[in-house]
Length: 361
Image (cartoon, rainbow, N blue to C red; front, side, top):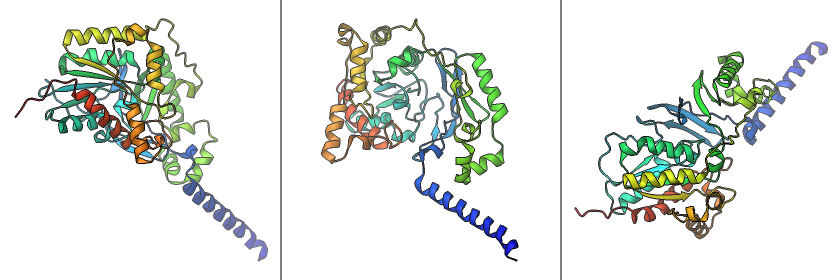
């Protein structure tokens, strides 16, 4: 009887051990096991590389802390519903990368909405802040987006939210994105696109495997031993993930000054005010302002109306007795809802005084 009992005892011990591991993983929540879900809202664009698909809606999740649903409006932006032809005003266009598109928070919690609310509270009752942000892009794409939309929106003011890595994005080849079988593919050319599609076709986990990974955390640790484990943890597939060279360098990339010139030309032609607002990075709060200064000749920099709210943000944080990092997600370098609200609120007075004075009544 003892011999018959031993296998059962061993099985019970193994089950207890697995349950203990499962409990420990759920308690500790190691970041290596966190789902990394890109929102399935992209479609290729010949000029921009990609854009958001109008009226798309999809989940985004990252690091066990970001988990929300991205809603793209009918014009193809992570913004409240807007309609054309644009009426009312004053109208502000916001350009920028992920800090501006703010897909990792609900639309209502982005800095453009905080800015819109603050402008309306300051007397600009019909103020609109159109969010034309597109994550993963640089100043070249931001200027191209403005050229595409300026005639339709007819802004009174344009604010370029400049991030420290925008210059690097200019220097890299155009990246395309598309949604394919539940995955976001990022590629440089049709050959890479075809290779990524083939990789997904060959390695995409089935329904049972997905359910196991989602609901049994122990399986996540073992799944990392599989070559296709990444397709369970993330739906973002890049060339390097399948062993293809990235080859991002673009030796013939125009300098930042070229895009500043295009912005000035549009501002003069369409008669809008132009400001540049450096977005402070989490780890180096002055990084964007310094990168902007290093990326431009002094004479060109002097032509820009730069509004830097980072010192005011730092003062606000100090007054509250908290740390700078509390304006950002713990495991992500973007603003959280509090950081966005503060950035938009402190930017509002500077923008308001550059807009036409509110009319009485």
